[in-house]
Length: 534
Ligand SMILES: O=P(O)(O)OC[C@H]1O[C@H](OP(=O)(O)OP(=O)(O)O)[C@H](O)[C@@H]1O
Ligand SMILES: NC(=O)CC[C@H](N)C(=O)O
Ligand SMILES: [Mg+2]
Image (cartoon, rainbow, N blue to C red; front, side):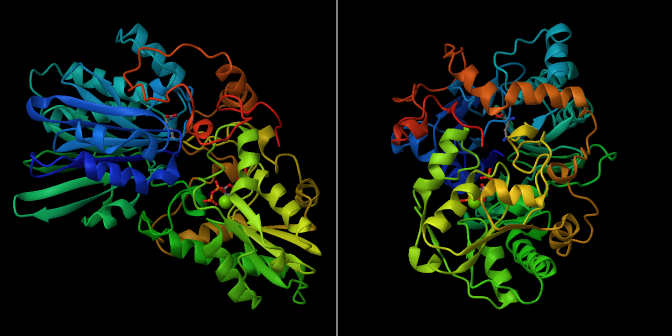
């Protein structure tokens, strides 16, 4: 679930890199593996800094100052395709035609087929296994085919329309054409989020695209709008041009954005993430009453920081049971779920969260989390609660059981890694060590989001119901994905230490280590720990 952003400033003398950097910091929760910015300066010259690590690791004052130019594109990465090598850090660049840069959030399901056609028909060299490099080259090839010496909006619309017909999957993208402007577009089902805003100034207007509205809000942009599914927005210093290019899709946004990925202070597709989480808490409280009866033997409601807090508080209000922060989070440790490798995820739960015995001793506790995916967090948390003296440990999840792989930009490719796969609630509770697990009903989750935008008639709920709205997700594809991208497959691949490719990334001073290794996650070999599945 990467984060993307692009900025065009009305005054070309001001450097876009500073606000792009700020924007990426606000999108850090969407990707912790790599970060990058490409800017465009005088005479259409491009400047780049990207590599593995968090935003604060990749950028410093010195390299930001070298990113000159009043427009640019930024990205934070959480890989769902290819590897976590430096050379797959985004944005990607291709020199022909015109000099194009692209950053992508999402995942393509027909990557193999696209790669083949780029090779056989377009004779384009693809140097990584990243699906984002494919997207860029499809866009570039479609632009090439317009055969124009100079580019116009019309040609870009034609190229993106072609791309919509070729690329199957979830994709929200920002692109930049050297010396021309910036572009945002979103797949025909609008699975992944992208919005934009305008900031008026004396010289004209500044324009910014972002995965989440929080960035635009914080940087003073207004008139914030979502890009519609199948729409493209082109921004130059002269004009903003929007066009809906295909009409066969229907807005089907990923519901997991509301459950977990997005920041609560973002509004996505007209739905406040915060409000939807409050509503999830409300519905989950009803579910708890339904499953446990009216005479609840729960003394206290405890959230799992960070994401579940909003819903847990609302749930405690509804149940009229005290809410207590029993787990204290180390604010310097990032998100666990999007870390690569099970061993690292498991270790980090313990390092990140500490149980306060005071709140657990001799109590029946209801722990609330936004979701239970691999069960990494919940297993550790339940044990921590017991170690801290809890009598009974109930575990409630704001999302239904996650039983199916995600193919649109969340790295959960293997059913076998999901704790709810082939298990009923009782055996999940047993696996987690809890006295009972209570899951949100899928209809209630949908209602929690739909309440704030009734125009959205369907959400991508594929991780819960196995319905893949784009088509093209065959059993063979899922089997291939499972084989190729399970934790075990990734870790064996990474341990081969294949040499870095020609990727146009910057060699950061610590490039051979991952962010996690540099920050003292010793004992974790490579970026993907091999030991332990769940
Ligand atoms: O069952 P699992 O595989 O452990 O995945 C689910 C957990 O991972 C996420 O937390 P994370 O630490 O990533 O982020 P947060 O701090 O925003 O809650 C999510 O909020 C759940 O707590
Ligand atoms: N999570 C994402 O959006 C990933 C984008 C892209 N598929 C990559 O792996 O880099
Ligand atoms: Mg969490």
